[in-house]
Image 1 (cartoon, rainbow, N blue to C red):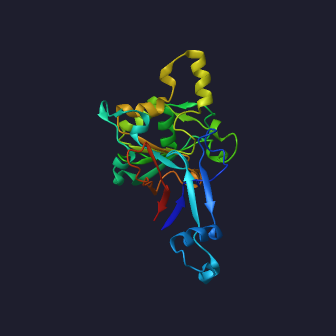
Image 2 (spheres, rainbow, N blue to C red; image 1 turned 30 degrees about the horizontal axis):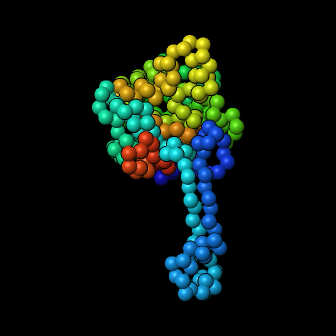
Image 3 (cartoon, rainbow, N blue to C red; image 1 turned 135 degrees about the vertical axis):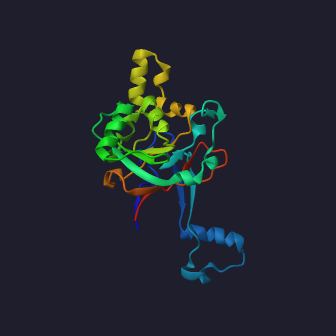
Length: 255
């Protein structure tokens, strides 16, 4: 078995989120950890511990959308499937999260472009893959090569409402992108909105999930290393009660 890690690390000071939304990690090393050990065992001579070391601990402050994560329907709206209460992340069926994967190469599409159903169909034809219900579709955009760089938030194409609806019509419930968002970067959408005043273009790929049952991963990595198909994706999310998303260690598995 070969496993390719498709997840980015959660770390400080990486421009992978808008200002103010990035994770904050406070690291406690083994010497600092001695203070905690002593708090639990007041009469302890810490020099008698192996290496005179305590434990290392990290304290994290972050949103459920930091790092590689799976968005639940609750993130998009309060309802899904045309009126049902939207699932939160702990309600996502886990068997949907370990399924055959297909990678679609959309790296040639320009930054800010909104991919259509025809774009998805063309990429599938090039991949030589016929979608099956519950396949997990991974979208390789130009954003993947920019992760960790200041320009990341504005890179890559987005997946539009029409394309998302088409995927749902094929029985796809989980997809993923290496960009910051399933939709086009906000900077491009903001300019289009300023010109058109059309509210329906804001977050249109996300909002399409209201008419079905759809979830997607964001901030995947190493998609360029994957073949078009022939692998299994595992993207089990962390169980956050009532959560709009859950961090996941997304991987591609090859037999």
